Each structure stands twice: as structure tokens, then as C-alpha cells.
Length: 208
Image (cartoon, rainbow, N blue to C red; front, side, top):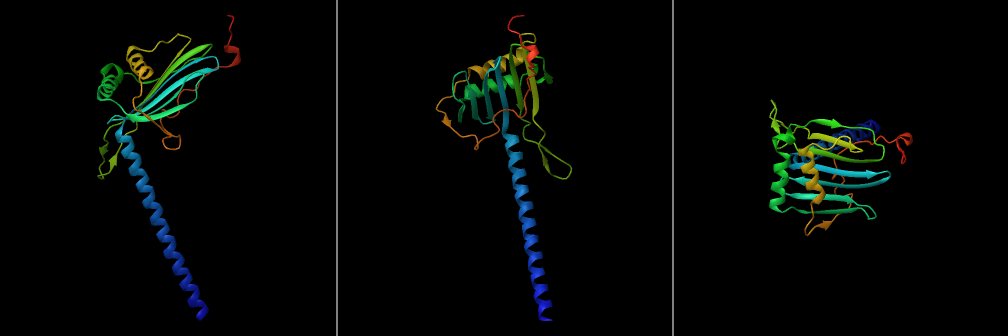
């Protein structure tokens, strides 16, 4: 009898412990989802501009919040990868917001790819979804960011003017009083995924 009582006591403790662990795991998941929704709602845009000539690639990415906080990653020819963060001046934030919210830019959609033979430039954007919407069950649902990709391979598909303006802004943006950060702090500066360059060896011919 005593052995059975001990077994029942141990089983009761294990059941209680497993229930607490499940509650803690569920709460941790809820907190993570809330943090992700807040981050998405505050996102103005993630932008990437990349140029390549053969194997030489230069790229600059920036993630900007609606309040002007930014994280920037850049890799120029012959230089180390640079990661900086800071607060964007009001005039630059207004300029970028105006470009992204213009009717010409908003009317663009989808992606435009191609075959790279020698050189290319690419632009990728993830535009933040905004504050979110309330579902029928009073749950805040944040839409996915709008994604736009364009590849200009060998000058055959030049950027449309709305993209050219945003890419030009990104290419010439100069951080001021920025501080360095490490990848682990902000791993999602560049737009997710991105174009996958198609560059088979038969396509590259320096002497056409």
C-alpha cells in the first residue's frame, strides 16, 4: 500500500510539473508572437541594392522603422562587411517615406528576374504592413510585408523610375553618428530570401 501511495504521489508531481512546463512554453510562444507583431507593425521597409560584375559583388541593405531607427549592412569592393545602426534625420526619413508611399511605387508588384551573363544590379524591398487589423475574434492580425524584386541583368531591364529613385536614395544614404552592431543582435536587416542569380558558366563569355 505504501509503495502504491508513493507511486501515485510521484505521478501527481510529474503531471503538475508537465502542466506547468506546457503553460510556460505556451506563454513564451505568445510573447514571441507579440514581439514579432510589434516589430512588423513598426517596420517601414527593408531595402537592398546590389551590383555585381562577374564574381565581384557590392551590396547595401537597410532596415528602417517608422520612427527612423535604422540598421545598415554594407559590403563594398575591397572592404570588410560593415554593420551600423542609428537614428535617421527627419528630412531623410520623410524623403524615403514619400518615395515608398508614392502611387507610382505602390503600383509596382511581383518580381522581375533574368539571366546574368556579365554584370547586373538588383533591388529588393519589403514594405512594412502598418499597424495591423482586428479580426473577428478581437485578435490583432498584422498582414505580411509587401515584397518587390527587380533584376537588371546586363542593362537589358533598367529599373523603372520609382525603383531607381529608391535605389538611388539607398545607394547615397550616409549614416551619421552611427554605432556598430554584431550580426547576432539584428540578423534580419536585409530583405528575406532575395533573388538567386542564375549565372551558369556557359552564360559568362568575356569575348562575345
